[in-house]
Length: 223
Image 1 (cartoon, helix red, strand yellow):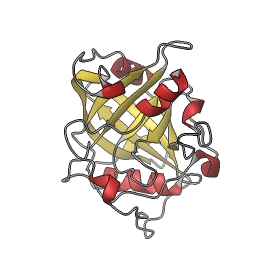
Image 2 (cartoon, rainbow, N blue to C red; image 1 turned 120 degrees about the vertical axis):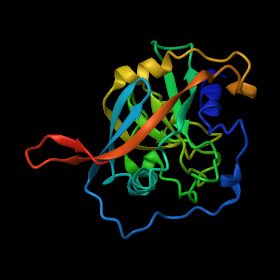
Image 3 (tube, one colour; image 1 turned 180 degrees about the horizontal axis):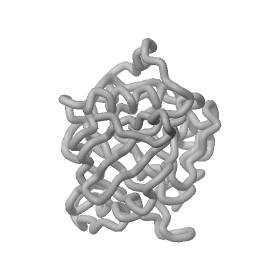
């Protein structure tokens, strides 16, 4: 029962509207953009910066999709709006979630699902994973894990064998992730298993930028 709850609760929540992604045909991101095997991105939030290393080599669809939002500055001004805290296991246990929440001014067409059974990437601490409804509905919402959650991998849940799509890991800033995880939650917002998981004062993401490696090896953030 606990495992089923954990798996159900990871689903993308659009509590203030949205849901159009469930009726839009999944699309592959444009193939014209060439990526290195890994891409580093800086998520500058109101409580600190999180550096994420995206794995384009193993998760090209999800990485290219995320970078469309980054390069078009569609993630600037989004918020971390949800914390899932699991009472079992070593603490802290769960994840934080951010994204466009179905905002039609931000959301691009959904992408094909990229399961962990294909990529080899796993839902371990620090993973960034696409939020979704059914497989093939992921757009701009994502979760960052504060603990290992293998139950979200492909094949772990017979009721949802596709699992979720991991496409990178936090390289720096897990202290910021934890700060967001510890945010006060609203006792009334959300519905069903999501009730009580919504952040009382959502944490704003100021900018999301790819990090360009300088010639001397020191990373510089693209403006």
